[in-house]
Length: 194
Image (cartoon, rainbow, N blue to C red; front, top):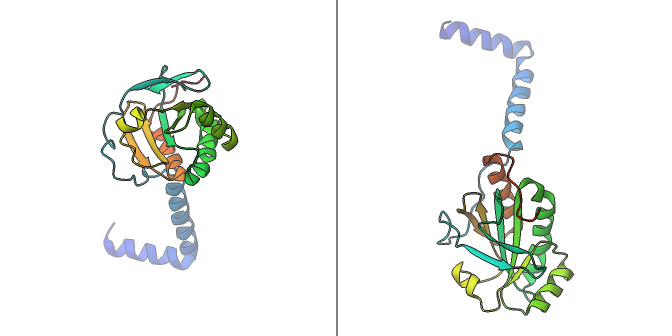
């Protein structure tokens, strides 16, 4: 087919209602592109992004052993450092709890790390905020130091291979990071909390 015949066919299609059909196809293609998880959201600058997450295992306030790597294979682990006095944390915790409830069956683990309260205060604050995922008390701040936490809340999203893929403060962006990772990993992995 020559360029002239292609141009004349395109012109005929446009005159014969092809514009509407072409616009509809273009809209469908754009919609299909927007339906997936998309690209990884922007992360804050942090030295652990792209590195192996520091290993830890701890007993949660609910006497569940949690950590990185998980006791069973996980597809994604979300680690949120928080404190009961932190106003932003009071907005982050419920959002992360919704993420955990929505995606734990898909192999998502969420671990809250309370950085400065007593275990009793951490439990009370977690209960008040509606957090049902495991909470670890980091009373000596050893874990927060290992992870380079300078302020709270700070959330880490770790892939199934143990690589820190996202670090930030926004729970909606953390959720997007989880969705991107779930779209990259094979199904069949189980959460450490099942």
